[in-house]
Image (cartoon, rainbow, N blue to C red; front, side, top):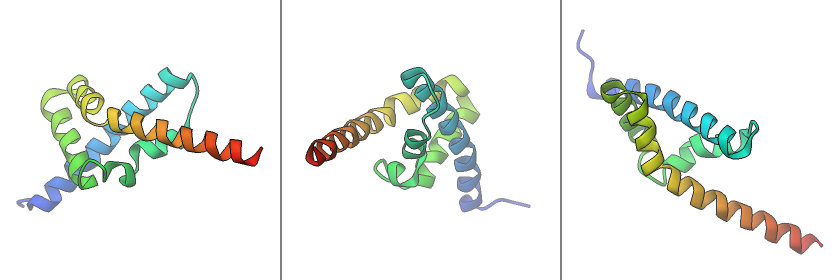
Length: 105
């Protein structure tokens, strides 16, 4: 039975989602030295991914890279293409928290 392109895209995205999740967890542990579920959810959410394109397409690209070139290449892709936006958004969220805290004082 031949798969249609939509089914293939979803399967690639499913793998890409897992690779992104692994990258995010390792990166967050290295950065924060602890489990950081809030930032993990932010890094892997469709809301975040939509800043880079259609979320399924973004995850599928990661999945294709992983399948053809391996984990290191997929991690490199995430580091180059997703991490800069995540760090920018995280810094903006942190500034917002600081401002909100200062207003309460």
